Image (tube, rainbow, N blue to C red; front, side, top):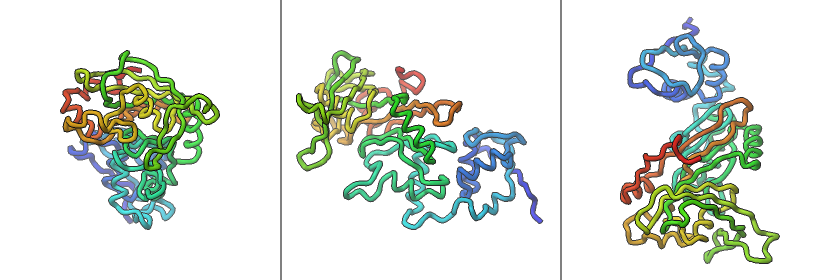
Amino acid sequence: MSASVETIEVASDEAGLRLDRWFRAHFPEVGYTYLQKLLRSGQVRVDSRRTTANARLEAGQHVRVPAVVRQPPKAGPSVAPPLGLSKADRDFIERLILFEDEHVMVLNKPFGIAVQGGTGTKRHIDGLLAGMADRFGGRPRLVHRLDRDTTGVLLVAKHRDAAARLGRIFQTRAAAKTYWALVKGVPKPPQGRIEAALVKAAGPNGEDRVRKALPGEQDKAMHATTHYCVIDRVAHKAAWVSLKPVTGRQHQLRAHMALIDHPIVGDNKYEGDKALADSGIDKKLHLHARRLVIPHPVAGAPKIDVTAPLPEHMRKTWQMLGLDADRYDADREED
C-alpha cells in the first residue's frame, strides 16, 4: 500500500510562490475549490501547521500532501478542458488572475477583449469563465463591467451568493474605484468634480455612445459624477490623471473628460484619437482601472484591495513622455 501522506520540500526556485500557485504547478488536476477543502480539513499543511491558499512559501519548507491528491475523487475538478475551450484560453484566464480566494477573484483585463458577448462578439471574458466552471467549482459571475478597450481591475464572484452581496455593495457605492488615464491638455483646476447627466445615443456607425442630457430629457437621463485629479503633466499638451467615478454609467469617464475638453488619448468615440496624433504614441485607449477597494462579501473578512499594473501600451507611453508610473504605488495614491 502506498503511504497516505507525502511531504514535499519547497525548492529554492519556488521561494515566494503562493501555496495555491505551487499546488497548481505540482498538481494541476487539483482545482482551487478542492484545495480549499483540503486546507480547511487540515489535510494540506506547511511545516505541520495549518495555512491558507495565499500563504507565501519559503525554500526548505515542507508541504504535507495527502495521497488523495494523487487520485482526486470523481466529483472533483476535471483535468480535461470542457468542449470548445482550448488550453490556451484556460491559460489566458489563469494569467489574468491578480487575487483569488474561495468566494471572489480579481482579473487584470487586457486591452481589446470584451467583458461580455454581443452582436459579432464570440470571444469574451464571461464566456471563457463559463467554460472553466470545473476550475472554479461553478460558473463565475461578473460583478461589474469594463469597456472592450479599457484595461485593469475586473471583479468576479465565484458563486451566486457572493455575486448578490457584491452587487448590493456596488449599489451602496461602498466600492472605491480608481482609474488612470492620459488626457489631452491639462484640466483646470487640477482637481475637481464633473457632474453631468448622460443619455445613450448611437454614434455615426450605430455604435453605443453617450452624451450630455439636454433640457427635457430628465426622464431618460442618468445622473453621473466623476472626481478627477492631475497627477503629472507633459507641458500643456497632456496630463496623467486619476479618475474616481461615484456612479457607474456606461462610458462615464470617457464622456465626462470629453465634456470638459480633455478627452482620453486614443478614445475613438469621444475625439481622443485626435489628441497627440503625431507624437508616435500608440493609438489605443489610454484608460486603465488601476485599483479597487471593496468590502469582502463575507462578513469579517479583510477588504479586497487590488492594484493592476499598467498595460504595455500605457507603460510605453509613460516612458516616452517621461512619466514615472512607479512613483505612485497602491498605498500612496490619494484616497
